[in-house]
Structure formats: C-alpha cells, structure tokens
Length: 148
Image (spheres, rainbow, N blue to C red):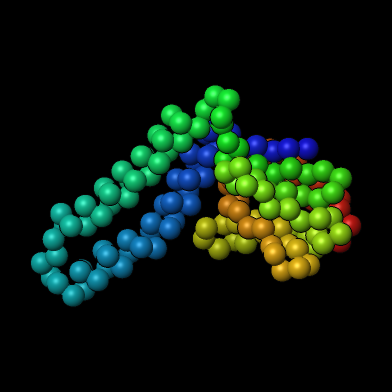
C-alpha cells in the first residue's frame, strides 16, 4: 500500500507547519517592541508578516509549476509492504523494517506530528496533516495491526 500526499494536502500541510513555525518566530518580534518601545514601528512588524507570506507563496508556486509531468517527485508518501514501512520525502526514502518497528505515537504539541518508532532510535517523524484524514485512518489501521 502506498499513500501519496495530494497537492491540496501539501499546500494545507505547508501552511499549517509554516504558520506555526512562523508564529514562534514572529511572537518575539511583535512582543518585544511593544514592551520595550512605546512607539514601536508597525511598518516593521508588517514587513516581517508580509515576508513570511511571500516566502510561503513562492515555494508553493515553485512546487506547483516545476514538480509535474514525468519528472515529478513524490513530495511526501508512505509505503507499507511486506518488509516494513517507508516514509518518502521529496524522493528520498527512510525505512523501518517490521522487525524493528516499535509502534507509533501522535505528538499533540504544536505542530502536531506522527512518530513511527524504531527500536534502533531512528524514528520517523512527520506532520499529522501530511496526509488526508482518510489516508491517516488507513495508515493507523494498518500500523495498529502490526505486532510490536
């Protein structure tokens, strides 16, 4: 079984992870001037906000325009086969053999993520929203049936 991230899910996940990461960076940039300088420059804060949105848009448009056709790379995917579970990220693969598979957990901190545990401490971690809810249900169903 192979689960491949859809274009919409890629954009949604990129927005989710990017927003949370950006939020952790932008909060100090907004909070410090408000407490230190009573005449904080709102143009500087707006510039930081706008630059993050522009960077997100450019990366997304680049992926939409250039990652297509015959040379298309699987951006994110999970392959479950007789040997183990493999996580695909931009064409490179990280695999956990079923003999080394120690279960999975869902980390509910921001950003929310899924961790596929390996007995060799080479865990695979990816965003909870990398795949659609139907794909996640199917992934969890298959992983829950594996003996570990």
